[in-house]
Image 1 (cartoon, rainbow, N blue to C red):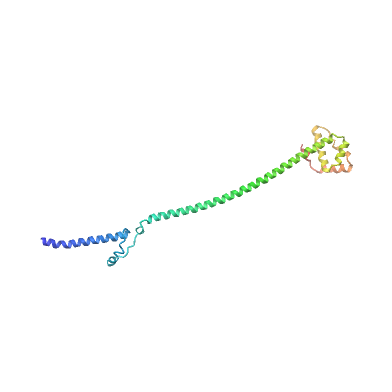
Image 2: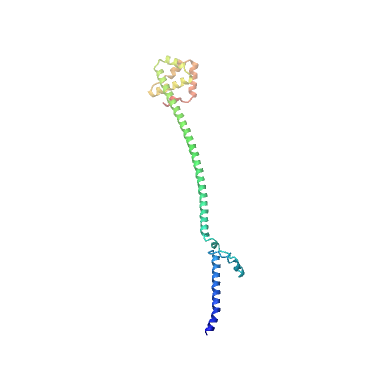
Length: 212
């Protein structure tokens, strides 16, 4: 029985050894397939004998950091897109800023033009007021003179000045509730001059003295 047992155990041991070798070999191949070890070059002759070629590895088995690389690539792509959006936004803001500056410059020019017009208007008003005051002062002085003397003074003036002074004198008389001496002054002037002045007074609108 012992001899039979000893003889029968040898094949079993051989089978177990072959099984262990096969499992070890298969484990190495599997680890190589997973990319944990690289035994393809070393075991290439043996692999070719058993008909096992170079296995096609999974993408993530080729590079253990592939997922991390892909994640970083997506983040980089997202950052590039965000950078492009920011660049476009910055360009839009710059364009809007230029438009605002142009509008502000236009408004500034309009303000300057308006200020110049206002200044010119104020100067005109001041001149109007000054001339009106001067005409009333001259009319007042003429009213204080004898009519013949006042008529001589008027005869030496231009037609427009005479018209404005006569209207100032009319206005002073109306303000004081008195009868105007203007018709009498006109009668003392040469007939042709008086006719010309009367005709112009009818054609022209009220002078600067009419608002006083």
